[in-house]
Each structure stands twice: as structure tokens, then as C-alpha cells.
Amino acid sequence: MSALTIFTDSDASQPVWYSEDAAQIRDKLAEKQIRFERWAADRELGDNPAAETVLHAYQHEIEKLVAEKGYQSWDVISMRADHPDKQTLRAKFLSEHTHAEDEVRFFVEGAGLFCLHLDGHVYQILCVKNDLISVPAGTAHWFDMGPAPDFTAIRIFDNPEGWIARFTGDSIADNYPRLA
Image (cartoon, rainbow, N blue to C red; front, side, top):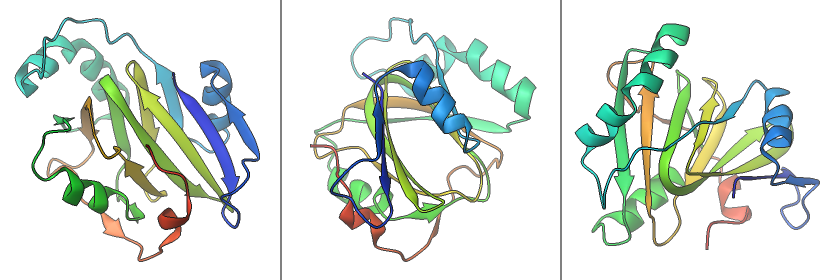
């Protein structure tokens, strides 16, 4: 189930707000210009689907975002617990960073934890199957796929070169809860 937990950026021990209600999550994130929607990841993809299969199944949804926002490229990230580089990739994504473009993800399987560092708070959004999140360009954040990742998400980009991170050097991510 999707969830939003908000902490102050000086105290990771006690959340100041929490909800598993999609409408409340959407509204709370919209206050910070974060797009959160529940879409229908309703296509049968089989076990460990190929990127082409995922893109073909959801091309109609991608085209809506392209028409609305002018995105230029998209791909699929799929991570499983048996991936040989899972720990290295997890560590990379757990470092706070920004992008010069929006970070858009549509989860078609599994789950991941987006953590946004905004205005003196840390917003932890547990994204699950059916969730679309769009983090605006320049927003400091990190992503946790957990120690045994199991997700597939469509990534949509403004930049045809894809995912380009600018790491902040801040170790704040080390202080906040992670996926178990």
C-alpha cells in the first residue's frame, strides 16, 4: 500500500505526518508541487518482463505524459533480488541528489521508497504498483529499493540522455528509515 511519512529534517525519530490514503498523499504532495497519482498497472507482463514488453503495454499512458509535458525519452528499470549489482546500485541511489529535469516514475510492479528533502522536512513516499510520481527538477532526494529489490518502473525523461544525477554530498539519507 502506498504511504507518505513526513519527518523534520532534524529528527528522524518521530514522524510529523503519516497517511496511506492515496487522496491525502496526493494532496499533501501537491502542496510541494510533487505529482502523485494512482494509475492502473493492469497489463499482464509475466515474470521478469522485458523492457519492450512493459513499454508496449503502457505506451498509451506514456503518450499522455509526453503530450502533456513534452517528455523526450523513456525506459524501464527493473530490479530483482538476484541482481549481481543490487548493493552497489542501492548505495548509489541512497545518496542525496538532484536532477536538472523532472524525475517521473510509474510503478508497474513492486515497490520503492522516494525520499524528498524539502523545506526543512523529509517526505518519504512508499510507491507501489499503480503509483505515478513526478519529482520536479532541482528537488533534493534519494531512492531506496531495499536490500532485496523487486520492482519494475517506467522512467520518463525531459533529457534524451536519461538519468543524470548531481549528488549533493549531504549525508542526510543515512539518518532516515530505509526499506527493510
